[in-house]
Length: 246
Ligand code: BT5
Image (cartoon, rainbow, N blue to C red; front, side, top):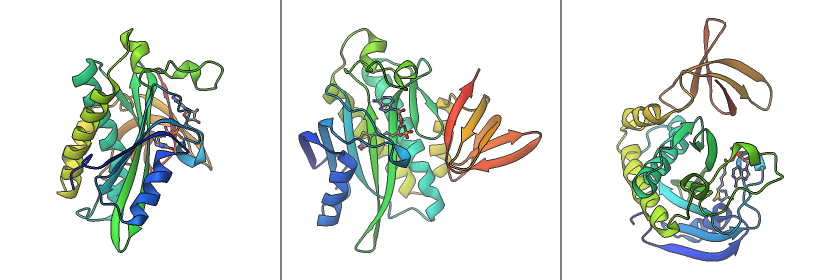
């Protein structure tokens, strides 16, 4: 099934990722999409809350990852999804988005979109759910710890954007990259991400559940991990929160 051939649309759900997981377990095929006007319990990574008021694009996509040759390549899914969102924003809203490792899409240095990837097995089939939260016509709410470092498409454009047009473009860009992933064209995914990256070349601080690491972001490796240079030594980081220093 093509991505977006079956789209479930809701006014309100807890989390589109949670609903899509239920649908996947019921047997709905890869390519199925869940979109909701609001989420009452939108989630970020590490069970953090994702603010999801009306006006944003909150969606999840069930991906077939049957062609992926090894589990470590699943780290490429957030990267290819971020590139898909950036390309869709460029083509539909003429916005030049940049990417922050591992899962953020920035406009003018502020987070406009977060991505939540999850892997699941249904009847022996390896699938992935990718959740995309893009602030579109919802001005970022004030009073949150993220307010000052976040933005939305409408804030950057100075006018509202067409939600459906953005959604369609994102699904089509994601379908292209999912095909690359299943065909083993990992370099193409990585090179595109590198070209859109705002992280590479910068001094960064990475916070993991156990430590804080500062260094220069050198590259992403073939499994999407960040390659960092610290005190002349090279380290790879699989997951963490990244802060950019200028
Ligand atoms: C993410 O997590 O950035 C992943 C967000 C994924 C959301 C989508 S919406 C559709 C699908 N369904 C879901 O339930 N989730 C996915 P993380 O990197 O952990 O960032 C979370 C942090 O971003 C929070 O702790 C806040 O500081 C901040 N944040 C929360 N809501 C935000 C928003 N609307 N815009 C910008 N930043 C936000």
